[in-house]
Image (cartoon, rainbow, N blue to C red; front, side, top):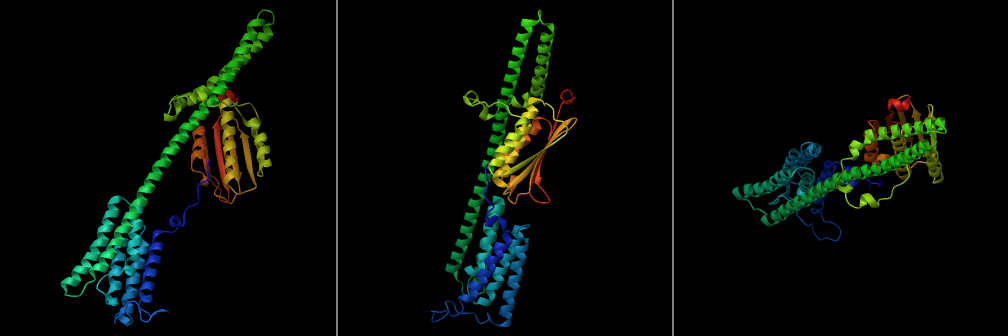
Length: 405
């Protein structure tokens, strides 16, 4: 499991906040360019006669109120929010005595246009661009029809910024879709890889069981006439091993027979096979993890007894994966592993009180693997933050009646 990067600031802050920052930055810039700053002999832009009058300031306040409304509804109704922002940009221009909507007033619509294009459908993004360009065109057309002067060149530059915002937003939209596609594909490959790992482990279990059966059957054949009691014990061991193997195959073979794209070719033959592990190795895992710096407390409940090899192995893998996640992501010095032997099921819980993101930092591969194991055994699996802090993973694996008895 790999540690996913933290969520960027741009994604944590709602779009309406960014649009609001752009609006107030534009208002500040509007007033700054109309005063004589240090080092200047005169203001860059002469203020209109209405700007500092009560009606001019009232117009600016009304425009700001419209912009605030647009910021509030931006996330739920993006086109309505953009319409309010465009209205605010147009209204704020009336007291500036200029022939076009200045870029400072259009910063907020540009930022809104970027967010709409980046997070909504292509059609919505295109409609938003047409709205922005339409308002600019209508503003110039009304002034022309009224016989007033217009700043066509400056308005073309503002229109260009809207097109650039739309293009950048479209690029972010395509990048997000591509990332989601890669994530989905990686998750599918992770499931296939996990199935392959389970198949390899099943190979070890079946090979071991068949070897035991062959040895016991050979021993029984050699002593059947001279030591009938020893032969009976050997054949009883053969029966037990056969039942365990068939029980595991019935639960898992159906899922493992459906080979995915990654299960063909020489990889099946050359991949290393490891001896099967089980709950007996949990204490060794706890000692190794404690030595690495994270203390693992193991609690056993119920009467410990032998389990079917596939359940024993899956239980160990779930504990191993959960403890590894605690070490990597939980930012804590300890965790607790609880194993409960019930009459008809095996319960597993791995909990920590870490301050880190825990399993939420996982890209999904480890959790998918654990869910896959539990699903193949027809069990129940949960993984979620704890209300009191930290993270908890639980699994309940049913034990077949013939094995639980």
